Image (cartoon, rainbow, N blue to C red):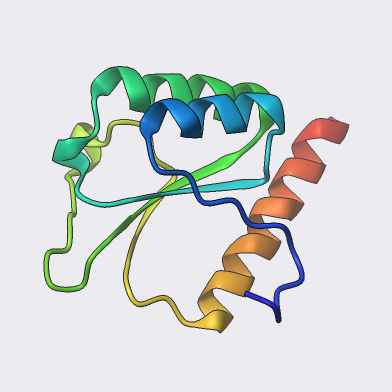
Length: 107
């Protein structure tokens, strides 16, 4: 993460995640774990904030239990990733999210 030279915040609960994203909208939010453990309300709140602030919202699941959904079952994520993430993939994702946020906020 040091190589990326960008601020990172790790939260421990859905409520904490929503509060932090509202307080200081990042360009990227990565939600870790199995989608079946997230309430619809939690994902809906994140999606609403993400849409308003042009935030990229992705889900990250474990390699031993990847969590893929059919497109029609997608609860609102822009993409799905499986651990482990390489630094190159993470760096590319951050650059893409940053560019997306910058371009959409200018329009």
